[in-house]
Image 1 (spheres, rainbow, N blue to C red):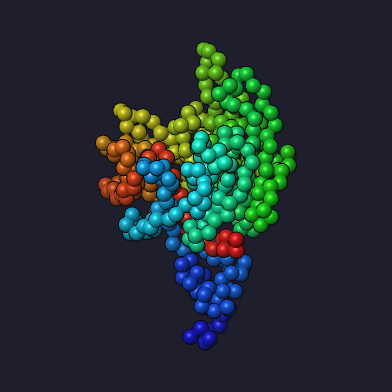
Image 2 (tube, rainbow, N blue to C red; image 1 turned 45 degrees about the vertical axis):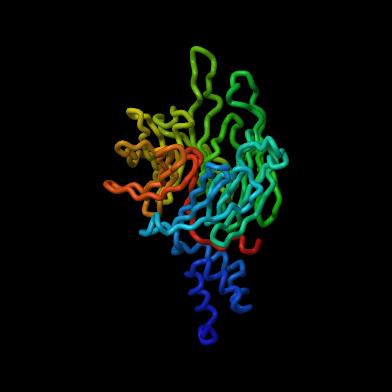
Length: 378
């Protein structure tokens, strides 16, 4: 049948198919394999926004703290259409999702293995769960003084890692001198680290939080202005919170302020996520022994312009973690019901749907992704 359909038409049809079908078609003929493996097809497929969206949830199993991954299809069937995935690199020590971009996830080890120090080597893994492929990248630097950022450059579809290394401890900020940072970028196509020019770097008094969001070729982090921290009595202030961004094309850092309501919060009370392809900051307050979350959105991608959208406040339930937002813009969050059970909920005005998984509520992480063929050539 395919002999009667021009290859260009076949290509357009294939761009709309799920990755599972494409992996099967690669074995049908040399012509189809050559087409699907071509860099042009991989790029065209990866920028097609009509593919099915999924929600990946990672959590540690209570019996051995081995990391588990569950992928939910993000449509009207949520949360019933799901399947389990294996950790791409078993040697990773308690891998955690650092970020996601263009259907790829970046995982990195957390924790220390006291019994086998060889497993404490810092490694970042780029993972495509749609085609079950991954690439491991060595990251030199300690787990405490190194921040990793991940994103796919929208102009080249080349995955990039940015590494920020610093030599200070904000817990002793009143007694230390801030030393220059050492910032590097790793581009997957080159497979090498290179230094970022000093002119593109931020002032070295900024301290990054680990969680990141990638939007339109820009990586965002929550951060602390270390120069505003005071640990000396009678003043005790942990510093103003702000947003730091890194442009994956120009490789420049930019600093943006938060509303004072958020800037004065503690680090543990804030998180960042993505909603409607916009950056959002989620803050938490303790209201009558129950956690209530507020969602603030950065308007039209303009720094310093955050507006509060809504609050997440469930009667008689205490939300443990806001994990992210679904394709229909509904928030996904975890609720701890007992020692081990974690419920991942979809929030509606009068309805809750949930999927029960087993793990530690405080260590659950999640991210949305569209199917992609990136890493197919790795």
